[in-house]
Length: 210
Image (cartoon, rainbow, N blue to C red; front, top):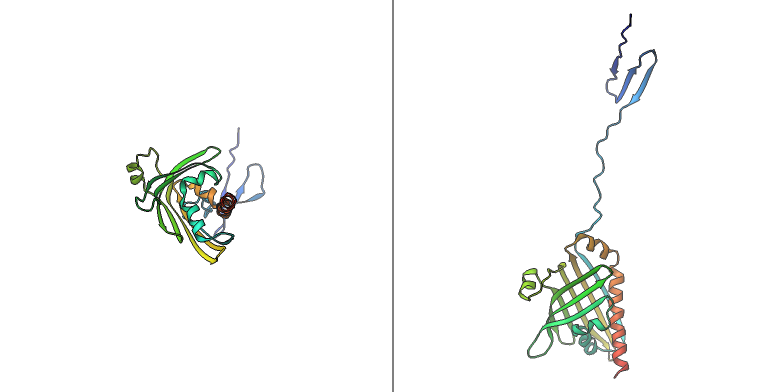
């Protein structure tokens, strides 16, 4: 005749420990019951906030007039700025000939993007480029939406001496794609330094041909 064996479980008051009576054994084994609460929230890998960076530099052997001409000549960017496959001016001021709307095609490995910007200028002092909205993109008969939530670059030029010019560059942007934001945030300073060096090289190149 088989004997039935009962298993008793008792809970210790004000504790997370449980006493378990195992069959065929008179010893009690204490097992700790862990509570999996208050787990940390997942960390977002992709940044979506706006990015901003500024740099000031004094460039020798040039003046504000030359730097303004270089920065405002957007259609020439493709000849000296890395990763640019194309640069163009869509609309110009009928009086001054300065660009009002311009665009860039940026490519690196699998990335290939085109975007347009409105251009505002103060002769020999300032060049501002701001990305256009998607509605404006449609009016420009472009088939692509802007990759930026917004983009704004501001160049300011001040002559220090006759042959020295102080350049102040402000860069503010936010990509629509959070992945682009995260990648670009890692290289903000490098990107801005590359831009400044590219324009410095352009100054030297034009001086050699004068």
